[in-house]
Amino acid sequence: MSLYYVQKLLYQLNRDPAIRKRFEESRDDLLAEYQLTDEERDAIVDGDIGLLYVMGVNGQLLMHYAALIGQEWDQYINAMKEGVEKHGPVREGLYTLLEDRSR
Amino acid sequence: MSLVFAGVCSHAPGITGRAHRADPAVRDAFYAKLGEMRERLEAARPDALIIVAAEHFANFFMNNMPAYCMGMAESYEGPIEDEEWLGIRHTTVPGDSDLSRRIIESMMGDIDLAYAEEWKFDHGIMVPLNFLTPRYDLPVIPVNVNCQGPPLTPLPRAYEFGRVLRRACDAQAERIALVGTGGISHWPATPNSGVINEAWDRDFLERFVANDRERLIAYTDAETFRDAGQGGFEIRTFITVAGATEGSTGELMFYAPIPIFAVGCTVATMNLA
Ligand SMILES: [Fe+2]
Image (cartoon, rainbow over all chains, first blue to last red; front, side, top):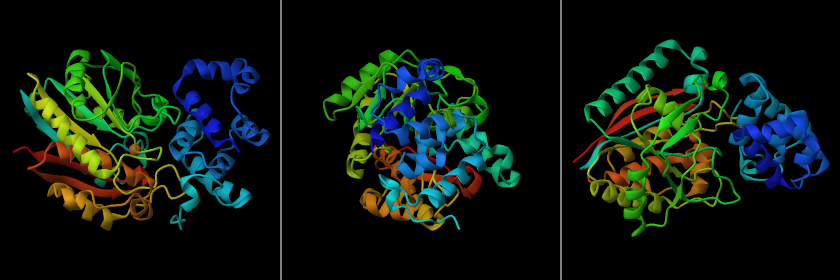
């Protein structure tokens, strides 16, 4: 697990158009600069919001990333719920302590 | 001159970005109170607005996270978010680097704050500005209190930061307004989005308008996380405003949970003593 680097990449994608351009045009070079597992790399490339949530990505980073890749609000909220159903509880970070109050 | 205005308001991105999905009656009542807050701000004839925000990884990350940072740029840009998603156009917001520098220098005698000559605004600042300075014609000085990446500054330090900020403002020739923006209880950007602990919020707001320091700083982060969600960590911005207006009480102008905005929507101003 290298949650720190997953989050760092999302942080930079969210705020910096130049990093977004590199992500589009020379993705392998860009990703080589971050210490990512294959699962983490795939989750980012696939825009797998549910899995990124389960990995423990901070919600604010993830919300901005979901908006960046064009996910509608309800789709984005459901993706997190489906991620937990599919991959199990959040693995790392603050949300490991989160109680489900949504139902 | 001194601090001429102080208040707090919510900043959740849904307030502008999902406006069409809210109950129009409650939404419009909230917007009306934000409009009233703008009128009070304008009536105070400020030369600059200090906005104490809890940003969401627009500028600061865990590679180098300041507990407190103040902007010292000539101008700022934002939002970092997609314009359509947030419902706010990308723009440039004027700053006042000279005033920033004087305030920072004044504060450094008492508190170690970071400064930044580059700063991109996210919804945490853009949503309040959208209502309070919609023409972006008032110089803004951003302040960030880290409420996102623990370890977080303890609540008594946030109050103290506010006190020091006040002394620095009072030492300047300019008329300065202060707005804090954050929480209160909410679970933003999680599957619990839309959950709001109204009882907790009302209790917190009662402490806030009374400017009851002891009760404002009485929460542990574990309690806040349990009762008010991660978004509750943003009470630090309100507590900073309370510290900056110690001895004054506030007026709660509006509070109502609006679930699609994912927060209990709040507007309050302080009656500066
Ligand atoms: Fe926030």
